[in-house]
Figure (tube, rainbow, N blue to C red):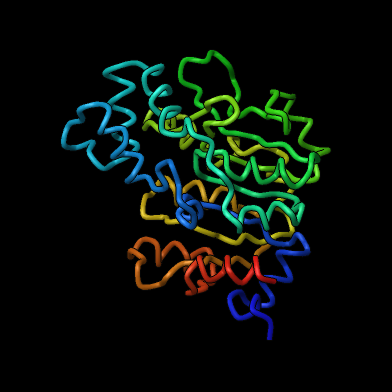
Length: 278
């Protein structure tokens, strides 16, 4: 038996390599390396709290902290702080480079750094990304923007021709500092996400007939669970998640059970070592 199959079930590996599994990456992926930027919502909340004095209710809560800064300082101040948190380019970790080399139909990345973008750029040029954007104060009736591999904004329809679509539902520091992070950013999104308006059409198309593989994700917050449910909506499955079972909250256990997600209780670092060594 190969080192890879010891870490990741053969069915998962086969489906992943054949493009039948969509990687769904969380901030825990970056914790595999030596990150120069926050790699969890708690760390990012602490970073914001180190720049702005926060009320007790907002300390340690990313979305409340961001909302307080936006309300008390201005949206520009919040964007500037988020950009500061990720001002240093984050190098891809080996598992991101490996995933990029597969030239998959779609990768979902839910964190704000640009590491997976860098990995895709190193792997080839037939890719692009769609990012969720805030609708607060932009005066535009759209939920997302598209960017090609060079970072130039392009029509969303361009995504139809890309071999690999990178979907960043919460935005990213690169290439254009789009951030969904404050409570107000999610108000309109969550009112319409059940009817799928904020989900790009190309994402809907590429999830058909596929399952998802969650890597480095936590779903301890209701908003994160809502987003994941809607991104998975009408996908075919099966789904897996790499996550130590003993750390799950009761809400997370219920979430995984309801969506029929099978847990792979192997440390993500072990999964990475197996894949890179294969």
